[in-house]
Length: 231
Image 1: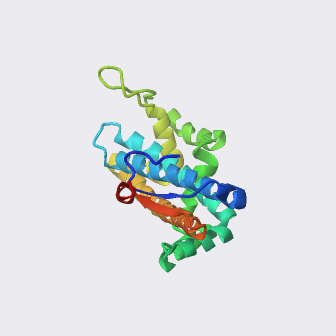
Image 2: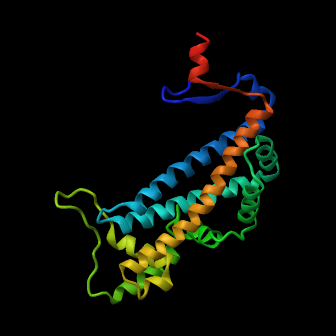
Image 3: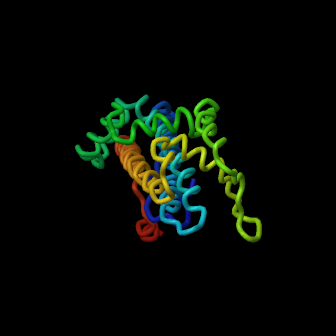
């Protein structure tokens, strides 16, 4: 394998590592996949929160659900391998006591984001659960009209408006009932802040575990500068 052209630094080992420690290598690869998903979701959620487009609220709701669901899955993976991962994180030198305390809260379910993470992943994110959405859709019978789909003037940027509103009702039933656009946006922003805090903790912890694995097996840290100097 060769690093991407835009890469400045990278860790490298020979493939013998897979023969000597395949099971842990597999865990580290899974952690890398989860970390990449979280990093991508984090960027998308932040972009949706700061967008000035007319579909901002819809984008913010759906990106929130996506990053929350990915975060839940990543935490579930971390929890299943916590003893091994914690040791690797501590070995890395990148896991502060504060970071470990926060990951302990997330693992124990006491972090402020945990209730919404559980709700989103178990009933909404990746599932679009029929029962919870049936309850959320029912109040829309009282609306004078329903807007199912919206698009811009040239028919692009299709937004499933009713689906978005039903999701908001399912996520924030207490707020949605009497909320205007500003109140709903504030609710989304607050919940997203909690979830993104947990996402950041999980991401930092997972990165530390990978660095710890690199350190444990004496993987070589290389850079473009060092490579250029050796040629």
